[in-house]
Length: 173
Image (tube, rainbow, N blue to C red):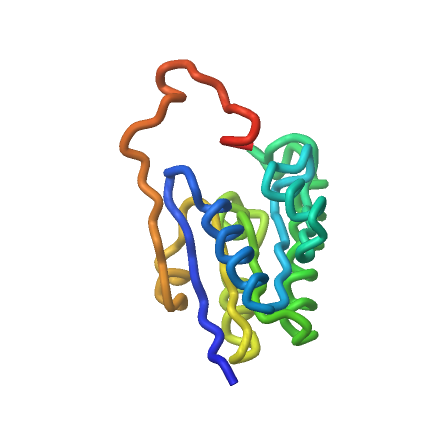
């Protein structure tokens, strides 16, 4: 029996989702069952999602609206989608059908008030011992950091966006 830990990839730098997908790909290659549940990503799928779906590797389910959530009062659909995503995480964990459950942008959803921190802490507490839980997003709280076994902060040192270079297909999305 393997032990499943809790990982967080956070910070203002680039690469949190990509790191999680890298782990998912590695795990899938080793015969692990993987699901990625994405928060705040209801628009066009990223390159990682398109590749996984084209190859039929593992489950990716995206929840969100076409627009990013800057104000939860402005569009209540953001809250509905976040609740659906949390429900999916809980079901994925309780089903024990997956070795790795990735909650992409869950940390961000907590930070902007779409998901209660206490609900995420309860998920961490109740997850099966053998299941790895990986969460990504900006602004991990102290309580979430304390509850995790591994926390990596992506820190921006320099970014070409500051030079006016826009997001590029296949690199940023």
